[in-house]
Structures are given as C-alpha cells and as structure tokens.
Length: 147
Image (cartoon, rainbow, N blue to C red):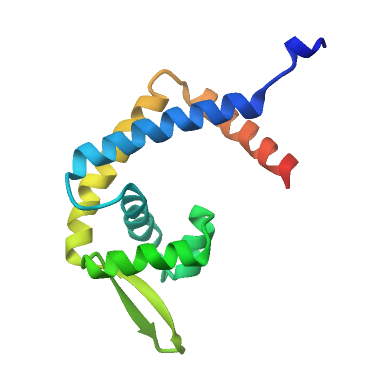
C-alpha cells in the first residue's frame, strides 16, 4: 500500500467524533436554555441513567468521562451550588458521598435526554440493525487493539 493510500482510521474517527460532539453540544444547549454547561448536562444524564441501579460516586464520573479528579470535583461543586446535585454520605463509610440529583436536575434531564435522543436518532436513521451490530463489533475490536 502506497503512503498516500494508507488508512487514516484514527483521523476519520476523530473527525466524526468532532462532528457528533458539535451537534450534540448544540442540541443540548438549544434545548436546555439554562445556566448549565454541556459537561454538566452529560453528567446529569449519566447520573440519571446509571443511578437507577446503583449509587453513583465521584470516581464513577471520573471513569465515565475520563477526567481528572480535580476537574470532576470542580464540576460537582458548581452543580451543588446551582442546586443540581446533593452529596449524601453512605452508611457504610461516612467519607464516601454518593451523588444524588435534585428535583431541579431531574426536570432538566427530561430535556437533556430529549436533546441527546434527537442526535442519536439522526446518527442511526440510515443504518440497519445489522449495520449497527457490525459497527459495535468493529468498535470493540479497535478498543481491544489499543489496550
């Protein structure tokens, strides 16, 4: 394969990721119309979805969003100031604080989920169920090859 014909999967994935991020961010910003950052909107959506089955802690957000402890801590402090979350001690270990959404955040999450669903639906509209399955298999292979 000549150098000009080389695959540029990483670059192409980066480009589509950037396009998706821009569309998702715009959709969320247009839908919520609030003093809320896009990162906070994603955090609310994550806590809402994952928090149905288990307690959510700061380390869960660090892992999910691949961000440093200090970045997540700052975001959570701002969310707490804006009455979007509460940090609640757990009985097993008073040092551990689970993150709980407030009523305000739960109401906002309906709008956030709607905004995310709009873009997710747009991404999948021209794909068959089989293509989506194949896409996830390919993603898994790529992820595993980078470990």
